[in-house]
Image (cartoon, rainbow, N blue to C red):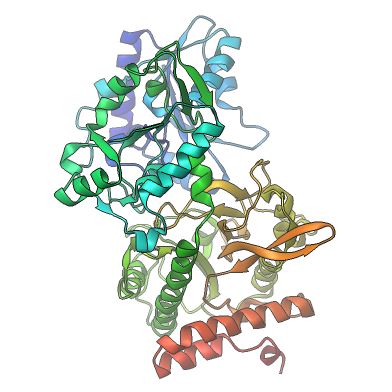
Length: 597
């Protein structure tokens, strides 16, 4: 913690020199990314907190870090002794950031932020809220002065994502985008979200962990498309490819000059939820700004037939890898040598044996016992618990294949489960099945379906703090929008071809965590006199632990769903397994009836 104290002290010296009373440091980058390159991990550097969501605020005397319920336990551990207070978002006793600042600061004082790290919408909202408290928000990059050994920006070459996987050429996608721009009455569209750029131009890279994106900006107008990327990242092949697709290449930081050069008579389309304030300030004042959801964001969420076929292949590969892994785990856990950390290598090994495997889609969450209750727990060699042939083990993991992206969570019993564990597991499973079997009219939003996953738990006064479902990219970001299934209102409706997760959970602090996650696809259900209806098809292929099911709690319909799902799992995976693996899987996929007799 000494290093964190020294960094905060150095920052406070710079703040005083600049006449700034507080500095807000979010955990993001100029592209509003979830996973970010080392050079932009400013919040991690200043606080030591590594969770994917969280914002640090450093005042001249006090400091706080705001994060959500997924990271309350992790935040408590990582911030202990740092001098930074953990601010638990969503709890009644926790003031929001603006309220806290208005209490800590006096009217007339100034708050500094690096405008590259804040979206246009976020910056405007924060500026207005602080102004109401008599506090001024200014754009100043204080960490550029303080963080002197900052890592360099990645310069890894990127590669072309072939049409046989993507389903559409980049030139075809540009035609679709320009049609959407015309509808929005926009002459120029400026892009900063890395997954949108990767999807539009059919390029992939390895600039950040887990997400195969390329650090770049892009602009598209009626006739031209420009990719702003460091020249070191280009190869002869990618240069030729982009030229053939009608894409011009320019240096990464030339985006600012390009924006400055837009004619004031043009209408510029931006997605203010992602587009950073620093870029926004480079657009000429005379331009009409169309601030709305990125059309690429929406186009990308509807998967084409080639992408869907790829997902299906990826699910089979992932299921085979997981079968081999969990069989290995079951056979070796009694030796007492396995830990939450050491098993990751074996899981990676089994996935890497599958064709077109590129890497993990996120950091594996392996939580045994009490660690399972930490929603986004990340085991280290030092913190990892040893696995024993007892208790409950939660494993949330995923793979990146050229065919598609996977994300699966399974909770298993490593010994004889308790009645409490079985009850909690079954409550989660009932919610999972209720959502899996939902039939809903077109125009339905995810927030309208979220109750299905929670009702069995709500009936007993139980809840979980995270969302139930997120979109998943196609060999892209494992967390993708704009669709979601969660309690929070989201105006985006669920549409045919949307691919997302179904992951209710239940967490008992200091005891265990339970989550069951499959990936689901929105498909047609029926058409009646009352309109068209949709439903979900479950694509993930791996058994659910029957030993943790309390059969007294499940209905006949739920039992039928489990049996049908397990039959589908066995039928799809068994042809790719050896005889020993088939027998293991067959045992895991036996009908629920066999548990009774």
